[in-house]
Length: 247
Image 1: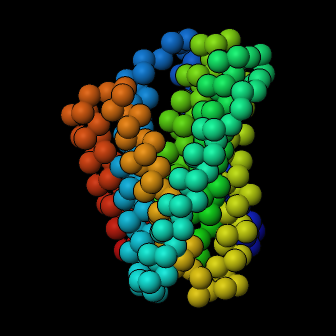
Image 2: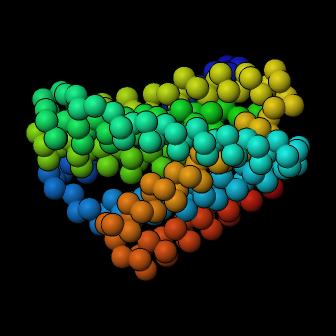
Image 3: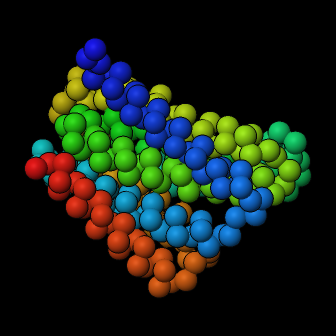
């Protein structure tokens, strides 16, 4: 059975969301996961997303340099504003957590959820640029989602939440991806002239996330050498993958 492009985009994006739940798996075996693991995973995700972002920029400039740059600036502004707004949110409860524990948990889950919106857009508009571009962008975001799930689990499990609840909250934080991806795909297919703007938007948001969230977090949890090496190797691996699937 041949699936429609919209269904294909939805399933790819749903896969990225489910990958977030994989971040909770280490807690099935051990209750305390070394934070250095999270540092290396964040660094790997940073390298993958950085290479994927510049792949989106390269694709966008083939259509329009001006619109690609405009989209990148809009993506940067959107994700920076979203992150700042969430940091200013009031204290609430989450599951069995209250007080400072709940605030920390809500902040982490909330940030991941807000980040998922531009990631979903990234999946959708990348498929507007072709199957190969959509595939490697989706894989980069899926790889990025695993340490996000681990980050959520590192906050929830030590504070009393079950592993399965942590996995559930992790997947929940990425649900905007399968919701936004088909809409973004349909938009750029209908208004083809806006494709470079959409590609730039996704790239700008992901580049901001790399340097504002992933790399700083990685440096807190692992050494500079380990982070630098992992980012470089992951970025080059994504470049190789991108090249191979376009042959």
